[in-house]
Structures are given as C-alpha cells and as structure tokens.
Length: 214
Image (tube, rainbow, N blue to C red; front, side, top):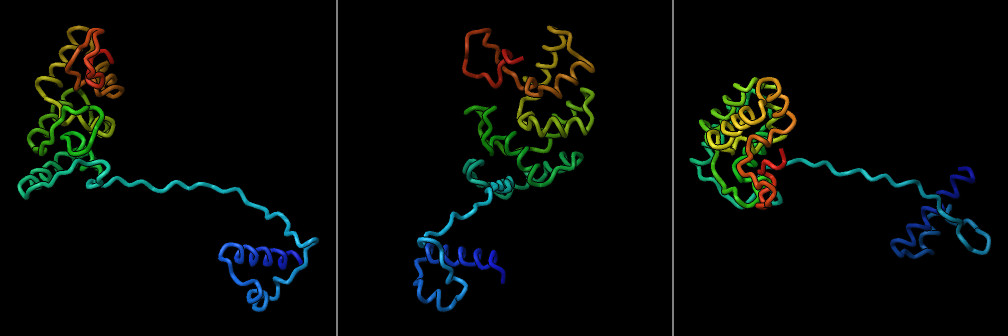
C-alpha cells in the first residue's frame, strides 16, 4: 500500500474513533495502518467532496392523508367510482391519475379551486360522460382533453348547464369568442369554464372562480 492510500486509511480509522468513541488502543492493535505520525499530533484537514442533494421521488397516492379528506366509500359508492374509469380510458391515464382527477373534481382531494365550497360527492359515469361529450363538441380532441384534464381536473365537478354551457355562451355573446379562438382559450385557461361569479371590482373572496381573472 502506498503512502497516499495509507494516509486515507488512517483518516478513515480516525473518523471511526471520533464518531463511535471507540477505544483507540484496540483499534490501533487491530489496524496497523492507523499508526501514522503527524507533526505536533495534529491531523491534517479532511478534504470534503461537494454534497449533492437528491430529492426523493414523489408519487401521488389516492389515500394519502396529506391530500385526501377523511372518507370511506361504501361498496356501492366504490362501484360508482370505478364505473367512471371507462369514461377516462380514451386518455390513457394511469389508475393513480384517474383517481387524482376524480378526487379533485368531486371533493375527495383538497383543491384550492373550490375553496371550502365543494362538498364530497361520489362521481357518476353519466355526469362525467356528459361533460366530456360536451367538451368534445367544442372541437377538443382526446389529446386536447387529456392536457385539459391534467391542468384543470375540477372541470368534471362543475355544473354542465349552469357553468360550462353558460360560460361558453357568455364568451361567444359578449366577446365573440368561438371556434378555434375558443379552443385556444380553453387550452390556455380552462378554468374559465367554471367561473360562476363576477365581483365587478368589489371582491367577494371567490377569486379562483371569478370573471375578474378572465
């Protein structure tokens, strides 16, 4: 073993003694390479390599207590939940992504969009299918809808008649937004589909659903 390797091994043994408070005599006896003389009995500075932080992987789980409200589904409610999956099958989401979308849309996962107004509901296949069919009628292809649902999953929990259809009419009648222009707007800001209040400058503390953001 060359001098450099002997030096490194000695530093390693010294650190072990320091960390675990071992008996230095027994360590020296069992490890001859620790017996290295340093001037004035002072150990040289240990060269430290830069430490690199590797962030832990984050995987969303439906039943994470940090993201879901405390709820237990009955067998019938679970069947209703699972029955909604075929409506989302065209978008090739994972099971976790489907649960996240449904959870945020129907109040099972906290979403700042709803504030405190969203009560938990069990998603129904007919409701989800009707909203997706209407969105397709706005010239949104499945690839467009996939992106929209990831960006704004809460759309499935909005009212089809009072919010989605009404808001599309408002944009068409008041601003002449329709066709391709409407499609581009929805891809950029799909939350407009759920706007249900206009504070007109007098804040109503419902900013996430207010036309003032339009």
